[in-house]
Image (cartoon, rainbow, N blue to C red; front, side, top):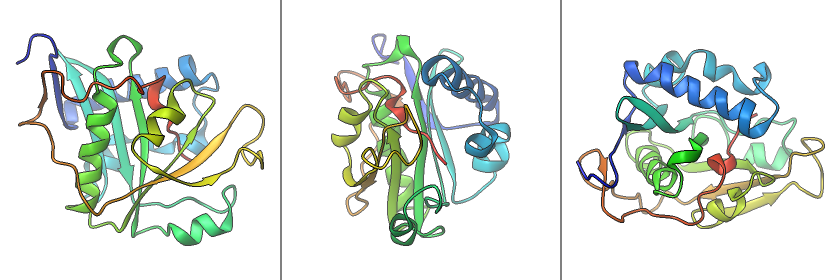
Length: 210
């Protein structure tokens, strides 16, 4: 293990689920400020069933020692209308669309490339084992660093900020990450050296789902 970057990056194991849930809930309450919202966060209650037990879904984690310090997930449900525009729901239908969610990194472990590495691995899964045609996400750009991070990886498809579709304080932009060239994971489950360092990794990357 690289002493400077002592992280193991992998698809979540059953023993990772409690730590992943703790990190996700901490992000809702401490970073986003609105806490757990059942209509938005139903997957968090049963991460095992929603991600680990579903062959086309995935939960990826970065582990430091025995602590889950970063997460990324994807599932097979596209953006719903409402609250999202009808044209987005048509462009990204459930089943053929992988939606990227829960891209969160604990504050003390940011700027080591963890979010970028997890997203690359999720992208490779979506294009390969998942069998998806498109990889979609939307983010709250009010989260510091979120917009710059996603613009370094993805293509904007819709800016909802002028519409205020999610209400006050939620500045949503929708993105697509191309799947035509899946990223190759860096090594056998570990992130090492200077690989993946990113100045664009802001607060939890700002991804959420509705």
